[in-house]
Image 1 (cartoon, rainbow, N blue to C red):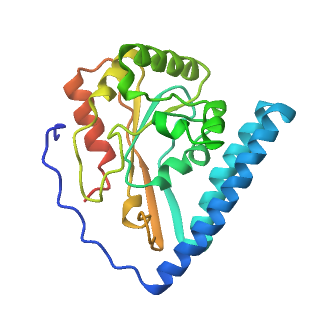
Image 2: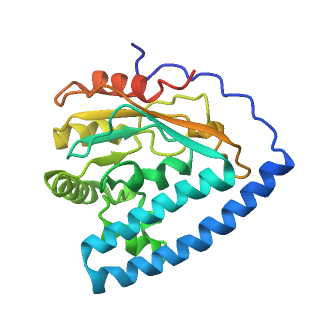
Length: 246
């Protein structure tokens, strides 16, 4: 088993975009971002008028809409290997692109994500994220922010909501496996919950600009128990979330 200090693999060679990739990507951006505005407005209406159930269905609908846009405009299909949890555990996911971040509400039932504080400040979308239920990560605010984050995460876990976290902290280029962020082991220890690691290979297709058709695989790893030493939990999670990184 490789430890979190293992050298990163060589990044995959970039593939040039074709004219059809560019056209498909432009159509995707127009459809998805215009649709996002509509879903944000719908969520803001659903919350006070129709209640939490309608609000969460609308938020999940936005995620499903993104998946549909990726499928029919970009030619990107999703394959899930294994069973994702729908309970109060930590789900640690590989993070190669925005695809998996946007797909979370469609991938699991009411996951509680850990977005950066800057994302929660986006007008409209930030309000929806907070109302949906997110553990806001304020990295620069010290111990007080950490206590608030852990308290919020415990509430969501007690309600049976999976806690979806990207332990690498940010998007990672294809083929690379950097050490996990130091805060992940702290969250694991303080919450005292099992971890379900998830490997995702979205970066091959869902590029930052021109996206390419193909199949994105989500592979659910074996559940890791709570209470392990820091070195062991980091090594096991790092290995599992990079299972598709070959």
